[in-house]
Length: 254
Image (cartoon, rainbow, N blue to C red):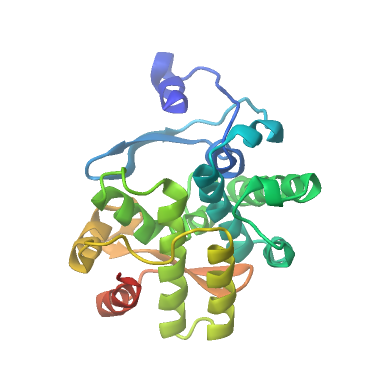
């Protein structure tokens, strides 16, 4: 919200980001996207406005609630799937990922640095999301829909993204883009981070499919999904049948 205010006040003033959550450190503070939520969808009101500086101090994470730490891990796992296979494998080697107390300072630093580098690499190639940058939305297509339908109150952002990644992985299996083994590896990592893999109770599948049409990632009436091909590589597709989405969501329904 501060970035959005900075982008609009006097047609743009300088802003410095000092993120105090893991999710902000590895994702929201990097890349220049600013915005606010709207009842019609996530971050529909916003602008591109790069910060002049991002200052990250991992020490502040020692006071972060466990749930918020886990939410940040969802974005870290995302980078492993879409861009950084080595990061994904480092996460697999860790005994536990659902609490900062279980991570060494060395691993935590590596997680933050590699995640920031992944996002910077992608954004430097496509700042305004005309192509490649869209892969950063992995897990967000369905994730944003789930957030919106639950009023942004039942789930924190990373939990919704985790659910979206599970859905995207299973859609990719059904479309024969990647195999069951890779999908299981992703799901195990998400569970290791203490994140949900099922839809919230009472959420209607047809409502999720309907709300996908209001997402920012819709182009020419087609919903764009980011789908994995292997660990570290994804593809962008606007050819995912609605029935495939419904079938996958049905398997994730509590």
